[in-house]
Image (cartoon, rainbow, N blue to C red):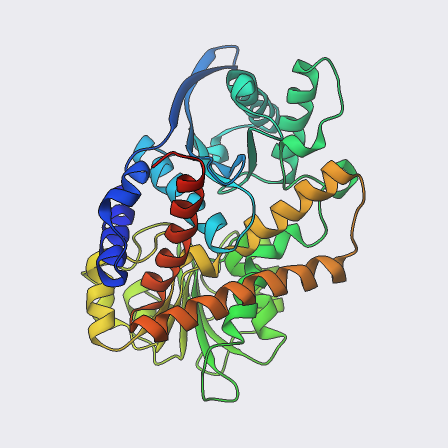
Length: 406
């Protein structure tokens, strides 16, 4: 399923259910700017290789655009457009002063040396420097990018800017370079705050998590240490299952050593994982993993989207008929951009908060958004996704009207 078209379909269904006029959202049909670049990198072999890169700045009506940069072999323009649109909705929903953007490079980082990865990271910033800035567009980490990549990007931007200190141009940086405490696990923590509010009746809910990278792994650890029974997790190579609950601390050590979760417990397939009798299913990997071909397998009452666009439109139709509750990505995984916003604010102010304050501020913002979404869902008798989109779109429309854009 084309993720951009999938997102537009969700928007159309949401406005139909909530009464928003189609003409009021015409400005969201296409992004404000799509940038495509080719980045030359001198490889260790001596050859020059060109990598295809993208940056989509979707909408900046609420503030400078904001969004991650992913390094992945399957990056393409449609995916980046979709993610930039989702970020536009996400920042609006949680009421932070950003627009939405996203970036990516078509590359398999597992085939790059550290030196080649640094050259690629710096080359991406050189190619886009005129379109980036703390009041223009602010990149952040995403799939296969991290604090080290952000540090290289920051240094390259500051070098281009005549060595001025401009920490607010990227977020997700190391602490020593102006990063925020809790940023590394902020998406997971935000998701946990919402999970804690779900009306699950069991004392120790059973959970399955698809994805065991930064987001899925950190969330598994958070849930494990708070009494949840994480019975199954998956990585890119497969899934493992233990009906008594996995020891997540030991699993993290195992994954670090063996580069996979496979073999730690009973190996099962992805479809078997979906069919497990659990309370909460958490897709925390790539898009479209839950689709029309496997949605009917799901027994979990709650699906919490920690990945971007993990559930397709047709899959949602199937799940809604089964009375499943889906917490949409623009709400469930917004913790990352919320703490990125905190990092940016701290950079601009030159004053830094401790971890407790960061987490308290994160909890307040994301739970206020959750409360608003649940309220609209009940008031209009619509799904949590429709309610989320209604709130996000309403704010974008209001701002656009005040500025005379529509």
